[in-house]
Length: 354
Image (cartoon, rainbow, N blue to C red; front, side, top):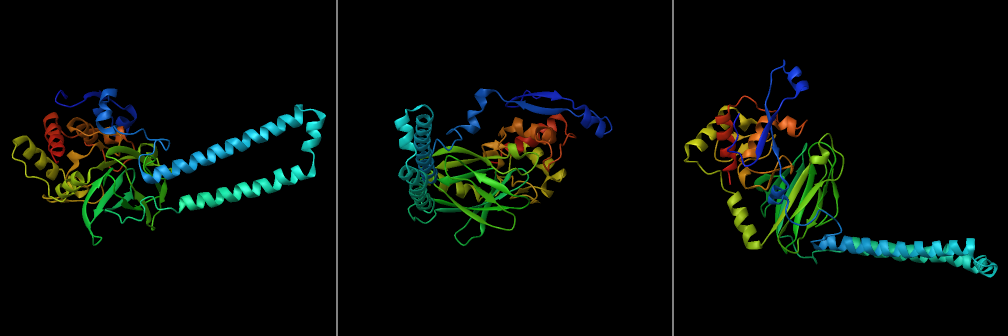
């Protein structure tokens, strides 16, 4: 199959075990070759690290971490110094270390005072409000799926305004409340540049506040083993200027645009004819499935497949034809029945849903 039209280079791979399972029928799987130069297009922003805080919550955690690290390091050095004195010091030094007052003070009083002070400090820091008590400017419900993130933006009255997947957009400089759920197993939501990690437990709702100091793109991931593709369950938090964020949310509330290009019209018809709407929603056409991600504006997202691929028509085509080879065990089967022209039309239509 010729895929010169794709944004990335595709190469066909034949998988013998899969072919045997499917009556030895050869299936071309198109996996994107991702040059390093392409990675910043969807993974730009801060390094995913708690040592690089970009929000108030992460800054408080980093301050607590450094305080405990420096304090623990100083105590360790002091203890090692006393141990060296006991082993290699003079008789007078060793006699001094054997005094009852030093043993009681260093072995009982000092740990009680230091550990009590650290306990008070960590409790005070942990219960502080990183947003200064400011009410949240946005409320977002995030549900851990296998293995992707369902993201629903809530209106003032708590109703779902619209749904996306695998990325969260927040207004920079303003607090956002995130309601964390799971529809299957325990996941853990962690965007280390912005906040600490918190579990997503079936049947329970946990709450977390995100606050980004400035606009940027911050990578997050699931931090609790949740199955075969746990390591490839990523997301991106995109902090935008408040005006830009408002414009984006207004555009996301709209239904998918009606295409006027013949290729896009053909792609939309292929989407409907192949019953993609049983699993996916595209508002504006008869597709209202809830099993998979909402695709109404899928073309505007930074990544694909739970944060593992950059998003363009080429990677969309690769995902459609070989999702089980790219991310084995996910709930979307590989669709290899499309011809090259059909796959091009379908992926181009999906990429056009901005």
